[in-house]
Length: 286
Ligand code: AMP
Image (cartoon, rainbow, N blue to C red; front, side):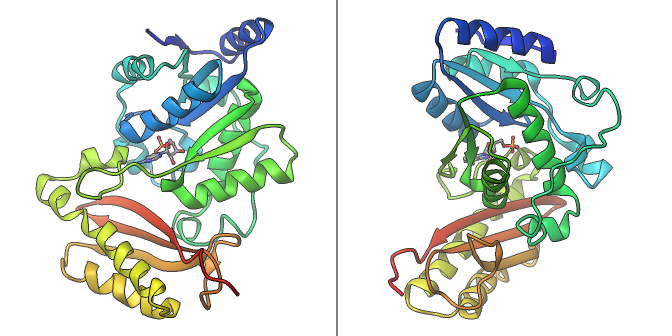
């Protein structure tokens, strides 16, 4: 099945209205394109849980704080549309920047504190840009359900809180991180890695697992962090932006382990910024 390419807000609203008129439920999968199997899993889930599936493909300028990063972000729209069709999407909403931002954006959604730490600290304004574009997409498509990857754990936390705080009548569905066979989390940015960097990249997941083991053994957050950092130190090409144990509810550094712990990493490898995380420690009582 081929997914229909839709470029304007009016046209996607008309497609959704038609589906609604036929009693269909609607799902949205927001993406920035350069789709891979991780995105495919979101679309597959959406397909199995809703009648009309929209995938948005939009490289959102207001969430980038480096013009170079924005320019270098991979853009593969034609193959993305075929990909969406193979995974059963009905429509691909691929607006231009002018369609999304006909005037300079003056209204923003800010999920304070949740979006200030970790990626928010190193990419100021990033989560404001993310929350704003997701709010716009949710208002344009007005789905029953929207799908987000746990790979971007802080983004997921920000979106969930935005939807709760603003009473948006939309279910946010988290989807587990899809990994390459060697453990590297799938990411559109992986395509930018040089072969030797791609070969080294699975060390990120190894480091997260080492930290998770330390937590499972009852280690304090600093011990878990040390265990992970030791793994990354094996290869000097890794520049660690942050590697921390966080409280998933507040997105602050965990002072002690007293419930679920999110181990979060952001590293630079050959000029490419990669993030990954794992959730652990949730089986502890008190
Ligand atoms: P992006 O195109 O990178 O903005 O991602 C679009 C959506 O796909 C986000 O909700 C991501 O969290 C999700 N996603 C990206 N990579 C993966 C992955 N490896 N596994 C699961 N979800 C992913």
